[in-house]
Length: 69
Image 1 (cartoon, rainbow, N blue to C red):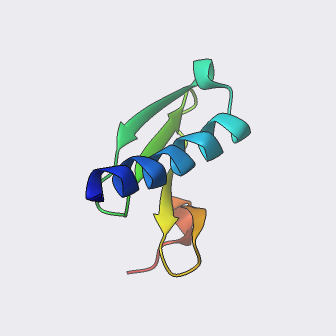
Image 2: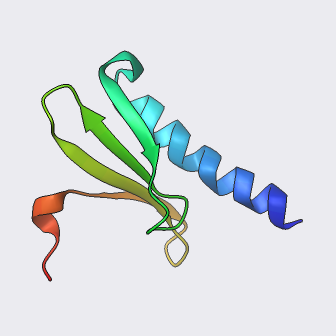
């Protein structure tokens, strides 16, 4: 059962990415810091993280400049 959930949430993240980006113009890496996270980098060196938010049941994204430590 856990495997089905894993695939389901990761698929939601990948579907969001495919809907928003030209897949030939980006590089996608696993970003395990966030749930089902993916790190997206474009050809200009810009990057963002996309992940699944369990509490809202939504795919969300965050840009490096939005992080405050």
